[in-house]
Image (cartoon, rainbow, N blue to C red; front, side, top):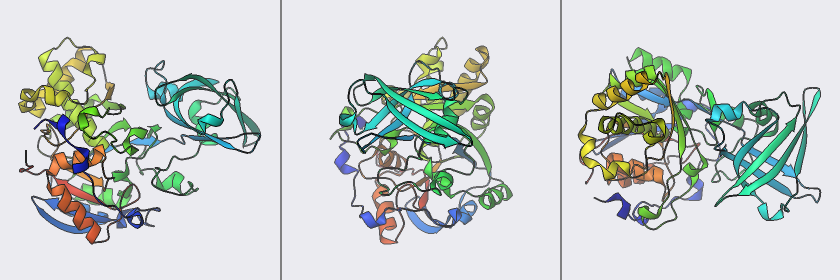
Length: 414
């Protein structure tokens, strides 16, 4: 199967507006859980998820933290211009460095109301932080293909950009949640284990996990590991191209510790990813190891996984996961690296042969999305059966909705 020839119209379904969860449930772990395994479907709630996972499994979580990425500027005429901070400018080596900038920073942004922002005009926003007045200014540096480079400058200059966003920004709820962000979203649109700031969207599969759930996992001898992948706004975007070959996959930054990769290498056949972002990270690590096996002299820029790279070298997918990760670990050790910080553009679609993953815990995704393609790659045509079941049994959809535990299908119609 050539995944580039896939038609996105084959990966759609009717999602009624009333099935989209606008608010989360009062208790995170009370959300419904659909369990799919080899064509069979049953349901439970997240509180009992440990009962449905094999002993000795390794759950991989994404510990990224959502930043308050929406900055609202009021014009003197009364109109509002929104600056949505997508990603740091390429002048910074990584997101952490950009978040620690003081006085000013360059950021790649979307602009709501861009036509109302006159050329050369500097937007200003004042707010109170304790006893101090914070002044934030925004200027357009350049227009990009579908975004802008914006310079943000502020006083007091001692504030880091991370601190500035905490003061001035608003949590960026997905566009399909058609309401303004509320105070409670600052806590509920974060996982309880969120640590590293940089995402503009939550890794929503993890929103259902609570301290009691983690206790039950430990009691069931189910292990946990944490990776970081900063989720970009591209995760919201339905595919507009009719054929996948015309779709450009968005890039997201991953940050994984050496000892975490060691743990992954020890668990072939037992890795379950919490969320599509964790899965993309784990599978990207596999392909990075494969690339090093082919050419041990690669540098960090060469490791970036392109969106169709797995399809272009299908013979390499037969490499054992522990072999691929051993090569990656050896390469990191030779370079004195304790962490691997690198972007990935991997696009997982039907025809993909999973190198690392045995199962996925995830929410229900938008029609015509790359996330739905990933689900179809994992369980084949049964994705329709799963989504039909969820619609017929009153499951709640998308970011604040319910979710599912999907075991990889051995018959995916490839």
